[in-house]
Image 1 (cartoon, one colour):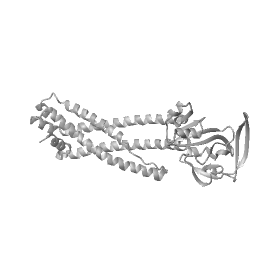
Image 2 (image 1 turned 90 degrees about the vertical axis):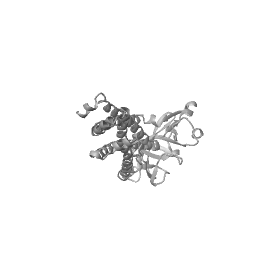
Image 3 (image 1 turned 180 degrees about the vertical axis):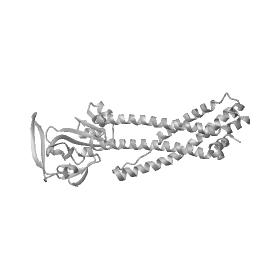
Image 4 (image 1 turned 30 degrees about the horizontal axis):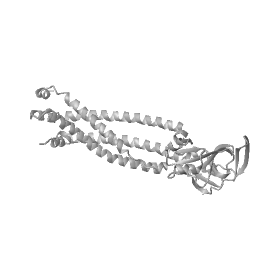
Length: 352
């Protein structure tokens, strides 16, 4: 009988309930890996969704000061490039940031009703309006002096975006209506390459710099995810270690039979190490199926319950890396467990 036949026989042997034990090991391992990967994938999806919304609506990939729209378009011909101005205002006594935009603005604004010809207000502000017009107060800079401007403004439309926190503090008005002193910006979406701007001495700010506090918080969260991953991997490894002891204890009689038949020690080690690895490999295959079911289930929950139209995808590159590490550590673990009885004779093992 060749080595592979021994490996296959001892992995899922039906003798003395070994098949049920091997199946338990495979299912336990597959569930552990599936839960680990699905949790990490959901957390990664939520973080990515948040960043994508910020880059699409609030803090674009690159915002540039001191450069014309045509100059930036020439540097980024294949990306979305547009201009806008920003200022602050009191609207019905509450502070808002005002973005002054034109028809080329690409900031993920969805107009629920009305037109962008005048003031676009968020849906939340619209629901709390007590009259058709709003008290609008802002500051205009003229000859170095700050001149307050107050007037009644009737909104021309209502908007929403994918970033609810943005909607709570921003309104939009036409670009040409911006008072003097507003910050003029040119935004780039679709590229984070800033080398061309640095070479020309053009001032810019990336979305990571604008959102440094939030980005740092997410970086800390990613580090915590890494620690959770290490803990989960340790738990799974301890489980594998226990299952390896059970597996070798159940296969003790078979190992002794092979030694009595005169099989070389290295070949016996190879057979039983590979037998346990084959069980884990079967568990990994089953885990892939469970991960797909879990990912689709969470995607459905996100869509139906939270209106988050972004699917959960398993990072199989990470899964394969973790699998290789586990198989390698398992092979070493089983080998060490086998070597514990290396110095004993066959008669000593039979009477243990």
